[in-house]
Length: 229
Image (cartoon, rainbow, N blue to C red; front, side, top):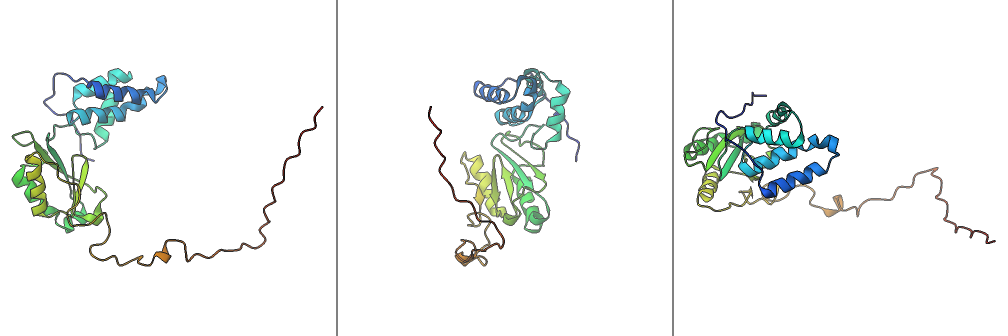
């Protein structure tokens, strides 16, 4: 695992918005008072969803609310790669999968598009709207190559479709997530080749099996009424 450090430039302060604080309070209330530190991951996530990344002042605020040492919150934030410790693009933060299935399906070509349109990896564009990084497997290998953009997966990408997605984000649009090759999910391209007969999975071809020497289930009997005095 690579070393993860806090950004060199930090905001002067951090405060949860009214809405985020209400959610944080809800998470804290889920645990006994002596165990409220269990809300550290949800609260880090709330801070990131609010600001786009996790800053040092945010870590300090969370430690204060949960009454735990700052270093303990820092340990959690630096351990889980889902927490961004550097500022990211405010409009689109692209996480391009670079693991073998995506590499074989064209991830290197997608990387060129990101470099041309956004710039170097792990840096925010000059206008502050875009940033990207290469990540390990995101678990959508069937629809490679793919990338996670903000909260959603964009799959079956080509250089052309990725470039259009970025242009749409820049224009203030909300590009539709999912497959860009016409697939509804992760089914094979074109005609389905397996499980074409419903009898293979709907249970209609299943036969009842009689297990020998299995004692019969006793018949239910009505309870006798209690005698009255």
